[in-house]
Amino acid sequence: MALAEKKENHTIIEEEEEKSRFRYRIRPKYTAWTEDKNIIIRTALPGVNKENIEIKALKDVFILRAGRDQILYSLELNLHSEIVPEKTKAEYTEGLLTVTLTRYNPLDDAFDVQIL
Image 1 (cartoon, rainbow, N blue to C red):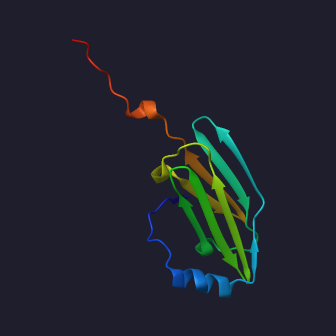
Image 2: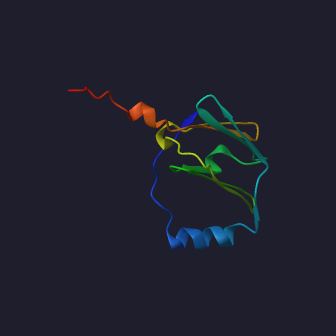
């Protein structure tokens, strides 16, 4: 199981290299659902090595990039719900990527106020 890491943003040079390296850009097949306080996204990435998968979890956006041969699998989802990016977990087995995102609950940050 992988944990989310904060990485540097891509530079323009890296984006240009990505365009020239991959001939085809494909939106992978995926399914998403909610379970308790989590959003789960399962994506098919056939033939992709684990090392070639890049996941970014932002406050309300999920971004996935995975490459193999001349194919770049690219998926960007607006979650329509806030998540806690640091709690993102991912597991990759036999071409199937499962990502678990924890939804943000504002009551977790609430505190009791004493009435005077």
